[in-house]
Length: 126
Image 1 (cartoon, helix red, strand yellow):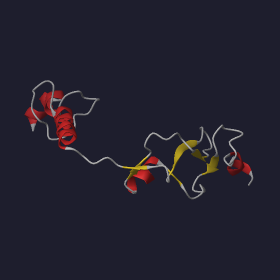
Image 2 (tube, helix red, strand yellow; image 1 turned 135 degrees about the horizontal axis):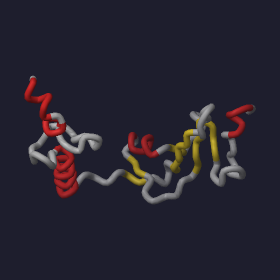
Image 3 (cartoon, helix red, strand yellow; image 1 turned 90 degrees about the vertical axis):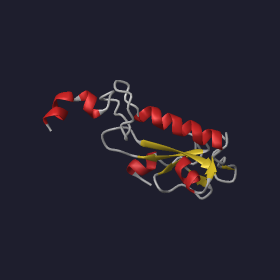
Image 4 (spheres, one colour; image 1 turned 180 degrees about the horizontal axis):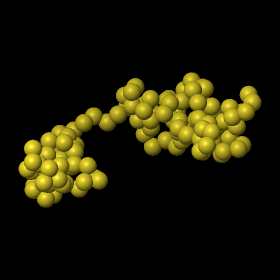
């Protein structure tokens, strides 16, 4: 392998400290967090086993960490308490701190309030 792909191929981990493979060329038995989640698995506390590098021309490469599939554990089931806590957190993200109403959408961090509170003059004109 030459060029940019050659820099991303280090199966022994001599250059980066971890076995490194080019984008889309990881061996079987490894998966990213998203790939594990799609299979109903989670890393389960195991260390990072390898990494994938995707070279980019003007910036540093994109990195994706890989975990061993055979060491992965099943995803923990959603409990009633966890479901209630997530619902409460999502309600807090939708509640406007100024008018205390449920906006019906997640309040943007850039505004800090719901749209009617952020732009009161424009709401009256409409």
